[in-house]
Amino acid sequence: MPSVASGHLFIVSAPSGVGKSTIVRAVLARDPRLRFSVSCTTRAPRPGETPGVDYHFLSQDDFESGIREGRFLEWAIVYGNYYGTDRRKVEAWLDEGLDVLLEIDVQGARKVRATDLAATTLFILPPSMDALEMRLRRRGTETEDVIRRRLEAACEEIREAPWYDYVIVNDVLEDAVADVAAVIRAARCARGRAHGALAPFVPFF
Image (tube, rainbow, N blue to C red; front, side):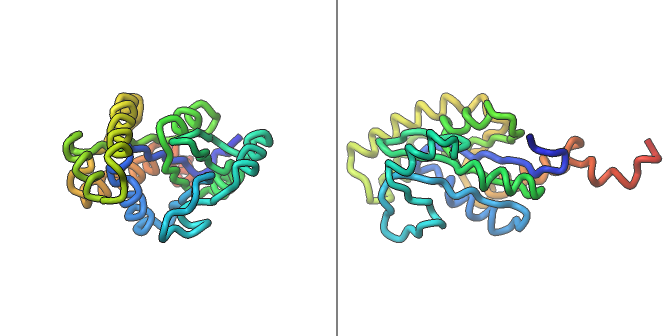
């Protein structure tokens, strides 16, 4: 069980192509108190990806062993590959009083919300479905079939957005980054998170 002095968990989800990873990198760059949980996956590394930085790349056997051993805080199968969050690292950071950011899909977010870890959830939306389609096509890395499947998946994921604590539209990148940073700052200022700062003033209450 997390202690009173534990850090806080932030979950960021979004459909593919919305710019979630770009926003997360920008927020992490400006916030030294925030730690990023690198997900584990069984998919092959893409060109330019660095093991341990972009993902922890595991074999299917290793991942399935981890599932049986309770290694993952959450896990899911996405497009035929396993993805999951290493429970041990996240809980170690939280126990140190550090805040942790998870960049995971809606399946994973629901699983984490079902645990005893307190979490603030953020969903990133595109300005419109047309804008999302244009961003996916601009990548130039996916076939027409893949683009169609990603758009269909995006519609399903967006239906999950209402249960998130915050919904942020990534129209202007700088504004979206500022919005996510503001949510994190506000969570730190919430009364329940401020008890440590109030400790010297207890005689006044």
